Length: 173
Image 1 (cartoon, rainbow, N blue to C red):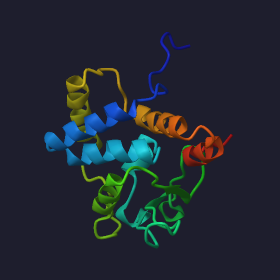
Image 2: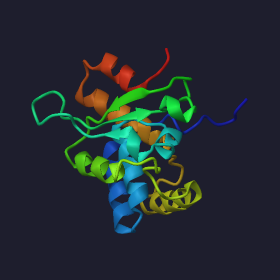
Image 3: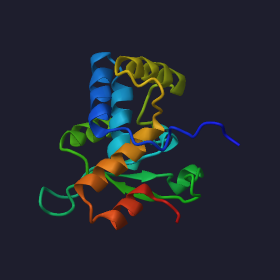
Image 4: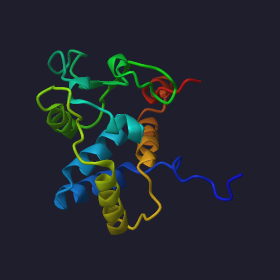
């Protein structure tokens, strides 16, 4: 039995996450900055973000106001044969984040090939995250908290959107 409860379920505030991303960009850690934003606004688990390929990121189908003007991505595509934590494949995730996420998603999409969207090695990202955590004075923060921070921010802005939030989080129960 654990002596201390996990910090990973504590939501990481959106403002702090965006500040951490801005620091990442300033420190030339663009991959870390993008990963923070993607995990926050698309509510991804760290492993899902790490396995994301360029080809799994889909640009909007139509212009503003059409209902089809969102970026989306496929988590755990069947052709990879690696399921999500809840043992599913081909989960669709829609990016309903702020307008600047259009640029983040386009950058990650790159050429649309099979290369990973995030190029940095996990150990390098962990070192960069440690540096950013120290600067924002959040030594115990873990990247998984970004997912919960995104969910909390969404719920605060959309109190009637509980069903949508449950779908966005892709929980099994």
